[in-house]
Image 1: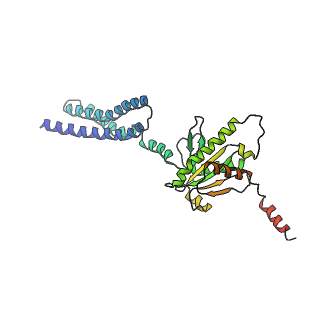
Image 2: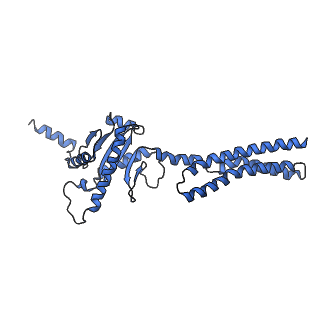
Image 3: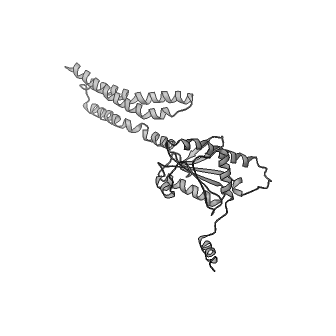
Length: 284
């Protein structure tokens, strides 16, 4: 009679251990998949293997050992050991790394809106949350991105291009390399200019080009407010106070530079009060 009981308990212990190991495997698999280099991948594999096996082996082995010694004294030690083993089984999933953290990191990659920034290594990075110290985008990233663009326009230290896009838009995808090439050309022109050279033309043409992309699925209310109906749609901003140049559709590299130059040369519009005084002057 004792043998069937032990076999039943062993089967239950193995089942519990397998469930714990499966939970651990699901938890560490996402982090394992994000590892890029080969040495880190190998190290992460063995670390993940230990994390996967440890909870199941500990619970299964401990449960079977306790059952085997159940009939032997002292009883209080058996009860304490059983309680500790139960606590280990319940706490194992809490101690393991949470898969939600990995999902939050992936969420940053899935965002389609942000500023295309040229990094020192020559690669581009889409920065969705411009707030300093932030890794993955956090709550409020849309407002922070919009404020970042507005401040860049008002500062007059860079020429800003705002692009409205949407998923599945072939012309949006075709335009994306044009945007990156324009940013790179402007950066190379600034870097290659002699320090004492006198800049010709508007100051903005010799300033960095900053491109902000807004996706329809993430900034729908903003697009409706601007009356955007087709994609892509670009707003080329010039000097602070100048009317932006709106271009619907695709632009080639050459046409992009022409529109950017025209926007940089656009005159600053007078304040509303001054415009109203000028209109009254025509009727005097």
